[in-house]
Image (cartoon, rainbow, N blue to C red):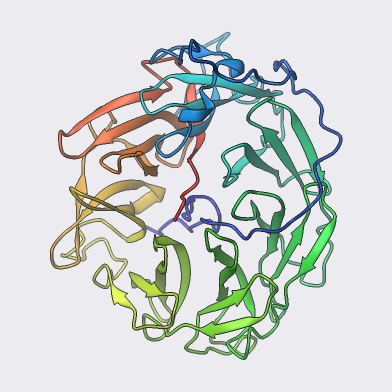
Length: 445
């Protein structure tokens, strides 16, 4: 069976990449804000000493959000009243479907209290806007309407629920499709827009303000001699630097080099290429392992072998996190784990986002020799996949999203590895329906 391709920005991506810190830049304020469907459109009232947080498992209005408490451990999640179904299954007569149902954006506290921020209209035959980022100041969410013409970003003010559409021009010399849009760091005062490489033409990276006006086009053709930009990148929390990935295909169009990762300043100037963690491989930054160390995922040029590495930003020697995974189901050290695309360090151990056959995904724990063992999350059907959203505020739990294999989401849960217990935060058993997407409070590393 083929392993599912990892999306560049789905984390955090999840993509795969799953989640990342963003580049900071000054910009103008958004214009043209309109109150969204089913949202008040009015400004949220500031919490007072008598403001009551939402009780676990219950809805509260946007004005009740206790903003001084919002921080690590909180989650934003997109919920639909439509129940997640396996491929080929049909909803019961009269039951809501994804096409004919509005979706709600919730702010979810660590105990499972939820605050309705805004709603999106039923998508009909088109795809719903995709939740892609949460600003570093915690005040805005970013959605990508990739199938609109032209593609647009949608800003959601989490304090008021107001939605602002931000169109951006996708017609550039690369011809590559838009891979992602993200807020700049540290506070989300601008947006980064990237496209993937197209043959021998590099991917592009642009910074635009919150109205879509261009601010900077990054030079991505050669990256200081390391090669052309692939479209993948990661930003430091303070917004001063980025780590860009080279396409590094090793063919007649894009020659291979040993520098898959290149550090650049926020003005596009080159700082340094980073040592190749894995020989004869393409490597991409996944997330910040610490404030100065990148977690990178590397894949062999000649096989499906892959590995996770810790790569210091200062150019120091990379350190292996996982052993080499052959990408084969019969690999004795990984037992059905075809590749690990992200990782989280908790006091109880290192946990990994693992990929299995037929598009499945699951949670694993790192063993002492760099291999993995599968983790069963209580309350999640063994036929379902598990995607890690992020760590809890105290870093002792993982927030995970259960999904159908190759299908839609089901529930959002907090999993405690030490106690081996889980608590449903959103979805079936709490408010029904299904959780379409979720992101953790922005990392402050």
